[in-house]
Length: 294
Ligand SMILES: [Fe+2]
Ligand SMILES: [Fe+2]
Image (cartoon, rainbow, N blue to C red; front, side, top):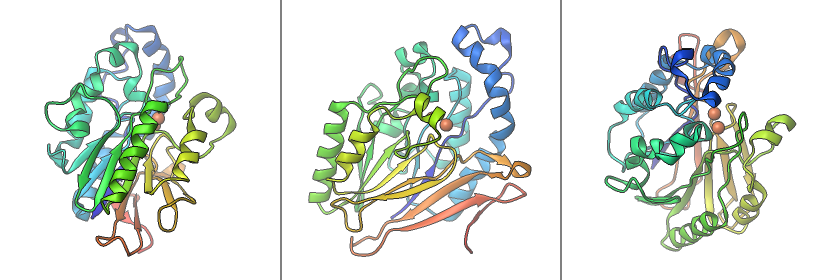
């Protein structure tokens, strides 16, 4: 099973940040901050990442949230268009929300993310279902968690909550007992970031999640939120422990600032006895993605 991992596209449609269109004060206040982000993330870069994944030959793609910035309808329309080449089959594509996909109370209340992408969480016709969801994909049980929440302005907190965590680990146990390799996808990172970022944008129940992972059979956790790549291992019931990987933002293209777009591909052994392989892909000077270390 080859599983691709994209994240943090932060797409901005042309004209979306014009002040007259930003009636919500919360959104208006954020627009200035996003001006800088607009020069770092690009729609073309995101399309090249999608093309790179398609060219690499994978069985399933997971996008770990922050598709957009302000959770506007026009942004989600652009995200759907960027991801369209990956197809409409929930058996081939999974998408979970990030904090930016829940940016306004209006977007959360109307389940805007779920209206656009719910089919890639729960399958067709179940857009009103709750998190976590799961998919059994051959020898893999993929658990899709929802950590996004509406945080205070200019904060980026997330939370899984006790009920969701209980369900995540029950699903993990069931998957492992059925002989499947268990993968958990969650938007927020599990490692500490810089102090200010951690104070304003961490997963609030991160410590509990890490403690419960240590007693679980989850073999791989994939996340976004940190736009830089990160990897660590937590000792657990999974052979070799739980690998926790953030691929970094897939839509970055600013070579002059030393920033490149990234995605990962995980090679998950079919029989459960081999080792998990991680391919790291990165955009080059021309924006095309190449596998690192080759
Ligand atoms: Fe992000
Ligand atoms: Fe985020």
